Image 1 (cartoon, helix red, strand yellow):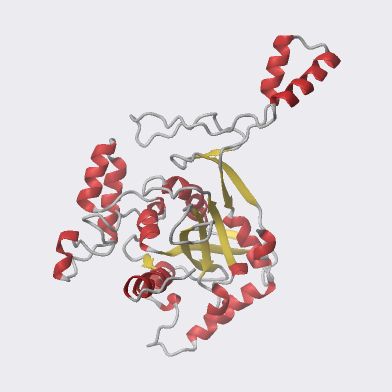
Image 2: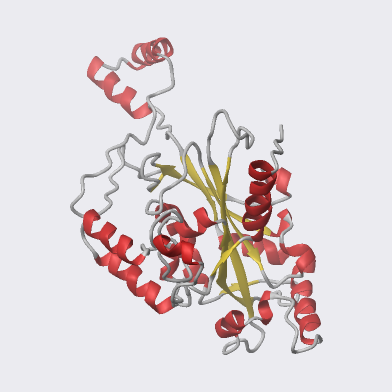
Length: 367
């Protein structure tokens, strides 16, 4: 993968529960998953590791030789057998440290220069026109008050999506693998979404997608680092070889409806409270009128209420009433779940409206 994407990355693997998507350090992981949805619920209990893949014949031959050579008694042999069995996880979750990625990112000679040049080009444009996200009000609210000195303040977009590794056929076997990636919004548009400049934060293993609750288990280690990067990280750059402070914030979550509702903590698009931007009910859709706009504060209050509720039944009642659940993104001190969530144009138009018209309305089918 590093070779295909022209990356120089180091990845960390976690033992991964296929049922609840909970994560464990490989060295200290228990045999069975201990995840609890709430404190009073039963632990998951799913096996995290496969049985020893070494065949019984090979084990018998191998340990027979050891016993003869070292004169180990039967009890000692059984103990040795247990110690030598490899622990192979059923599945692993792979993440990349964003801190390490940033160091590599700024080791590229053109990155720092292109950031400065892009900022200069935007300042030279007509102040009444907006052609970049960094000229918008949300960006200015996040960064304008503290962008001083030599420090670099970088905004990133967060992207989450799933795909079928068996090729995205309309019928047949269906599996879901996913990625979590981040793109720097301070570099020029022609570089912004190239593979080389994309931080591949995590790979979500198949066969299933996480739910609106279990996705938080996958986001947690990524948000942990992003939370720390809000305070800045000193990085050696071509212009500042002795170190330059780099501050990182996630400015926006850009996904399709399914992924954005899961990651940002909203109910499904098929729920009664289906919208992440207003309070309209599904039963009122035929009126074609917007509901009362949501606010970041109101969403955060509902999310915290959901998190502080101690039973699954009561949590679901909160979610049905408000359309909101807890999201790990809400831990970020600057995060606004109303302003910072965007529906990706690729999913909304190219794979949404246009695909629906081509296949459902016009009868085009693609092999």
